[in-house]
Amino acid sequence: MAQNSSRPVGRHFLHIPGPSPLPDRVLRAMDTPIIDHRGPEFAKLAKRCLDGIKTIFKTTNPVIIYTATGTGAWEAALVNTMSPGDKVLMVETGQFATLWKKMAERIGLKPEFITTDWRQGTDPKAIEARLREDKAKEIKAVCILHNETSTGALAPIAEVRKAIDAAGHPALLMVDTISSLASADYRHDEWGVDVSVGGAQKGLMMPPGMSFNAISDKAIAANKTAKMPKSFFAWDEMLNMNKVGFFPYTPGTQMLHGLATGIEMLHEEGLDNVFARHERLAEATRRAVKAWGLENLNKNISQVSPTITAVLLPEGHDADKFRALALENFNISYGASFGQYAGKYFRIGHLGDINDGMLIGALGITEMALSLAGIPIKKGGVQAAMDYIVSAHGAGARKAAE
Ligand SMILES: *Cc1c(COP(=O)(O)O)cnc(C)c1O
Image 1 (spheres, rainbow, N blue to C red):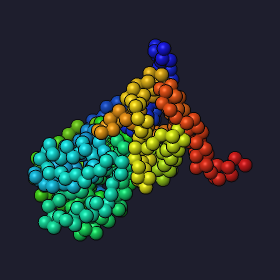
Image 2 (cartoon, helix red, strand yellow):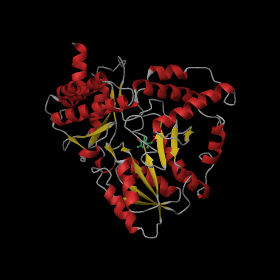
Image 3 (cartoon, rainbow, N blue to C red):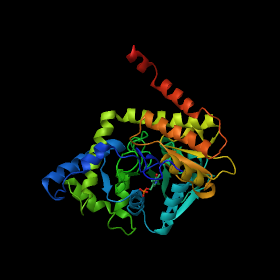
Image 4 (cartoon, rainbow, N blue to C red):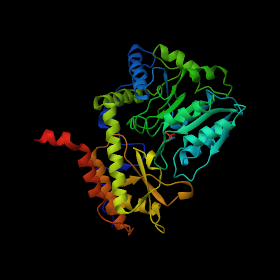
């Protein structure tokens, strides 16, 4: 009989790669009376959010805030800059890249895929080579994922920018940073990104239902001539209303309360500390996986993700059954698997408001669940993760204890 057959005891271990665990402080900030979204109090709240979110994308340009999940902001990026039939170049890093490409097709663009086996991440050289071939400059945008959430690969955005420039190509650079923003370093302005797409429910520690477009001057110029139909997602009206602290339609007021608090918390911790914490948790997870004798789906060790690790199970073991067994016995949720690898791997999310102890708890559960499922592993994964975390805290911590 599973231990939680009557009532799950304690907290659920939410280790999907988003939505991530909601900090109580964000929840409390949202538990507040509804205010007039055309009144003076709202304008102050909007300003906190509109100014604050720029510091997360590292941009001095406006950032658009949508009452929609990340998928809405994907669509917004495309319809605000493109015209029907435009060619866009995308890289098949995994499931989320595939979904964005399908969206591009559905709305009447012509996406072209640089295909991969989902285990390589993003190759800037391949992008450069394709752009060099495009003598007629038919490709209007390069659309890539900073973090491919389905496989756990983090793309080198600055290198992709360099590749586009080296090819002398005018295409816009659009980057999906939904599962990396506020978890991994991201620099919209410095890296020359034209549209950055973000979401609330991953690194920003918010509930689902809010997303973002950070935009460059070049993207704003493209918006002036872009002919894709758009209304809810149109940037122009949003930019005009945001200037005076309002939105063209009713915004998600409670979500904005949560966002202002989430951004405050990130700066209290310090963005660099947030990034270092995610890298530490990710490396600890990878060491556990290696010690268990299991394989990471992503094979490109220079592009490992700080927010999610995709773990392949040995031949003959069903990852979906494993996840169900772990949920039933240990009250933990992992991310599912996709595409040609469906049923072959599971994903451990380690992003958002997660600390060392929470991760060790999740890895301990994982080691137990793997054993319970009869999956042949070596013991010692959790020990390897703990050893790494101790070493990562390092000399500073030892000195403070003296
Ligand atoms: C979660 C995610 C999306 C989809 O966002 P929704 O909020 O589910 O609409 C898109 N891209 C990436 C990389 C994601 O991780």
